[in-house]
Image (cartoon, rainbow, N blue to C red; front, side):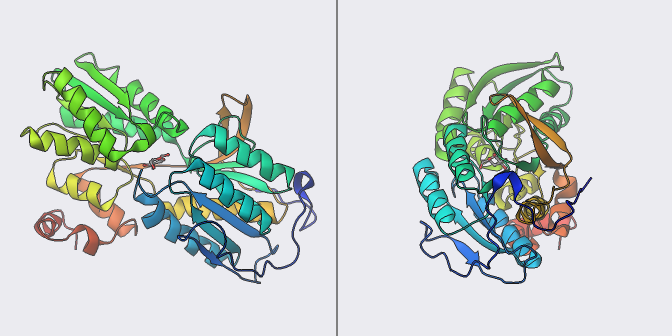
Length: 367
Ligand code: BGC
């Protein structure tokens, strides 16, 4: 439930709320790839800083999250500054320092690892800036809110998706997990195992985490696991579309693409094309519009000294605290419902249905 404090603007946790409009443009925020906006119409005249993690681990951050965040903040009429740390935790720390110096009242980060994320949040807190974990929970952190999808469910959907593609037959499975520094990756793997480990016909013949979700390294790792299993791999639980694409490229080289089901996540253009082509068995759609909207709501609540509407709490196993959370529902996507992503505005048909995918789109009823 959304509970409003009686005063519109109360200092939250001793935060010094900037009551004046933040007028400056933040071209000096430490990245060329930033976007910012100034507006004087926001309710509490705060300014929200968001630091995205990188451009390599998934195309989602720049292609889906940034535009969705811009739209959500623009709609709310709140000032914002969105930057990308380009996979560099030190850079994220510098951007955070600059944003704090420039007067953000709320700072949202997608951490690159919990340690650096927690340090950023600690510093923000000491400067009276509230923080939000966007998408990834910072273990041992101090964020006021955690905005994400139910990531255990994401893993369960992947596990179930792979099981649906494999059927009951005896099957050797390889897991390509996400970055060991990403708490989400742990949850995805747990969720997938909770489904697949129950199926006695399945055997795990290889499992490895991919540092930083690096797609190139994923191909090398998968090649090694594939070779170690003598090529006897029947299914691949890949944690996102990038890792799935890496596995598919190796399977292709072995004449196995399309024969060995591979999972994914993010409903990227490439992931959806692979699903349509049959080289990928499924992906998981997590609406950026929903997630960005939830972040904007939570951030604006903080700016206004109100409490955001939450769906529950998430345990921070390191910090031993329950973090108030807004967790959204992910959706499994197979060949049958690729159109749902397009209909929801998650991707554009013109981007997915290019070249050889045009006919596959028509077959799938996507126009
Ligand atoms: C996100 C995924 C993304 C991955 C790599 C995870 O924390 O939840 O959507 O694919 O990071 O960026």
